[in-house]
Every structure is written in C-alpha cells, then in structure tokens.
Image 1 (cartoon, rainbow, N blue to C red):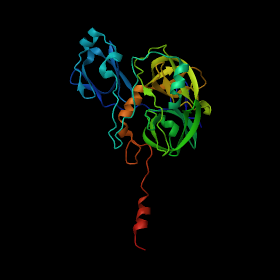
Image 2 (image 1 turned 60 degrees about the horizontal axis):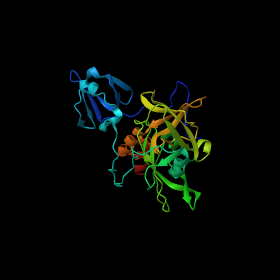
Image 3 (image 1 turned 90 degrees about the vertical axis):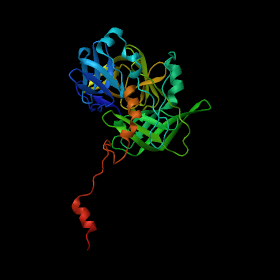
Length: 339
C-alpha cells in the first residue's frame, strides 16, 4: 500500500483540522469568535474554528487578538490601509524552541530575500533532505526539518504502525549512497491534520541535510512549484507544476491545489517553491484525474511543530490516536483473588 490519499471528486478521506485557540476576533454586542485567523481581507476576516472556516464581515468586527497579543485593529483602519495579510507581522508563525526535555530547535525557516533558481539546481541541493518512509504495510515520503534526524511525513503513511524505517541517499565522493535507518520513533502525530513528526535514533546516524520551511502565504496563483518523493516506490522522483489555487477547501480545511503530478507514494513529501523552501506537504489527489493534486500548507506544519507537545506520541495523551484499554474488570479480579 502506497501512502497517498486518492479521493473521489466530492469525497475527502481526511478529517478537518483541530480547533485553533490562539486567535480571537472581537465582535459587537460583547461577542467573539475563537480560532485561527487564516487571512485578513479588505471586506472580511477568514477564521478556522476547527470544524469549519468562517468569513466574518469587517463591519461586524471591533478588533482582533492574535496568540494573546491584542492588536486592537478596527474594521475601519483595516479598510483604510488595505494592507494584505501576507505583509502583516502577526500573520506569519514564528519558529520555536522545543519546550520538552530535548530542548532543541525543531526547524529552520527560509530566507525571504533569496532569488529564484532552477529546479535542476535545487534538486541537486535538496535531494538528500527528502526520504522514503517505509512501514510493514506500505510506504510514503518525508523530509528532514533538522540535521539531528527530525522529519515530517503524513499521519496516514504511518497510521497504525510503530515499526518504521527511513531510506536516505547520502552524497559521498560525488556519488549517492543509499542507507536504511531502522531505529525510527514517532515523536508526535496529528491525525486530523494528517501530519506526523518522526525521529531517526540510529547510533551511527550522521548529520542529515535539512530543508527550510517557507511561507505559502507569499505564493501567488500561477507560481511554479515542484515536488520530490517516491511515487509507486520510485525514489527521488521530481515533478514540476504550478500553484492552481491557495484556498481549496475540503470539510473546513484549506489546501494548496497544484498541477504537480502526485501519485501513491508521494504522501508526506515536500512541495517546494523556486527558492528551495517547503511551502506544503503533499498528501492527496483526486481519483481518476491528472494535474489535480493537493498539499497541506506549510503554515499548518509550522503550527504542528510549534505545538508538538500537545500531539506527543504518548499513551496517556488524549490526542494520541493509539489507545490501549485496561483489561476487563472480571479478568483483573480473577488475577488478584486468592486461590
């Protein structure tokens, strides 16, 4: 089984995104909406409340609070300045330092001032950072976000599995050498966002080539993008296309739609812009179609990494998809009663 979601034209096989608790839109009559602000347009503010996406008219808004910081921006001020959401400082998630015991940076961000380069040059530079993720039931793709072995893939690639291996191609003396790492653990997973964070713990593992996370907000429809992955198990396959739309909605979640060819096995792989930054994570395509592929926007990936402690792989974590129930009561009493 290959790890790419194939969906019918009107059917999505993924759940909606989790609720976002950081942003508050203040309304008239002492009302408010809590969620994640996706975009601020001239006429409305777009808010993800978890189970759906709301478009709130500017006329109903008094101000907004982002991640606990009160912006106090009135609807009139927003209309007057007509400032695009991509240029607002609060619209871009900030890289974070881990708050768990490992206490390491999880990812790096790209340089916004870098110039576009050719796909040929970028593939030669970034190819080592893209991996093949294998499980007993199938395979998918992934990419390193840190040089000490943290990597991102789709949740559905490793769903129900704990025995995971990663195939990496290392550059050595001008040649690519394939190496398989089998000591791979699950660090965090978000079932509804279809994301998983893994860590390569092999003792002989070197420093890995990491890729930088960019911003999909800065993309425009028609911009060129490309993907690297393992469609149908064909490792290091490169496909190129354009961004078809930035706001394709399925069941309350927004996806990037691209003409870049995506097939089973591409799931979890990176979608790059021409500056070499990840702008999305490829995860599904429409059934019986070509040139209709979708990717999770990188802003959701960064949010997941910033809050990964909430999605930690732990049997005591309520967000953990893997739950182990206590044995039936009568069995417990049978083992404790005296003979």
